[in-house]
Image (cartoon, rainbow, N blue to C red; front, top):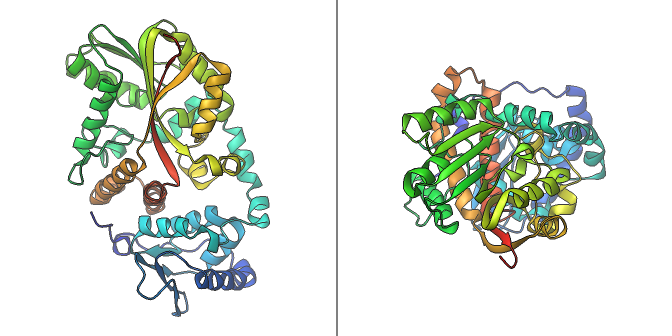
Length: 418
């Protein structure tokens, strides 16, 4: 599926950076870009500068080829002062555009050695964002605020791009022709098979979202499911869906923090919720799973992960996604999760599958659907800057997964010896 032409759909926005800064810092950043293009190694980049000059990076016939238009000198200032954070903010402000946003992000990630994405200056100027991120810690109250800031935006907004199951996590694509709907059903079925769900099971789903997996498991396996969420919007819709399907005798959704769960469950599943837990709370998260998991039980976790080699640097700096999309978010690495479970619990890793391209394809499909429903998004009250922010979020994540800078792990835990 080809990328959406955003240069037509998204009108330019007025630049917000002070002209004085543009005059002082912009030329320096522009020279840095010219130098970076000389060292471009993978693919080819064509850059149209604000004054009409056209620059090129990479070999003349190299592929993939992406074209970038810098429409405002403010881009250079934001990039010089705030690195990749500034690049994202400049896109939100309409300072630049491209014919393939996800492809551009992928090219940038594959040419990281040539690009000055971070410097001592950008690290120092990001101190305020780092402080804000620390203030958004996922305590009980903090978790409700952080989850609400994203997931309670509007159920109708999420309907514009999610499939009918309202699954807001990576699907499983078994062929190049799979639709988003098929991929999400295949994800549900994969987890039901992996955990060997049956009518004898009582499943705890930590972070039950809009109820897609819980309803599928009850409908196809006849098991009981208790789903917990701290999103009021998700709770209302998932409860209504269970009642509408006549599954409320098997499925119960609760407004509950994972730390407050009591009882015993034969299976536990948590799909892309650990990213909202926070590093300091990972021990408690895994201890709770260990506590409520019945003897002989299995726990399945689907997690977006940072590669171990970059984890130490990532955990020190607030990034664009954490500031604008998922407040309080923190991606684990496989090494961090294995270390925490070994140190804090009786759980052992029983199975692992890394499927980043599944997520790249899911994001591609979400973004395509989002842009076919822009009129509906605007009618809900979301402005052009929000649309650019959402576009950058979906496309940049797609580029990161497609280049395997992010992982998508299916993990199965059990107690050793049981």
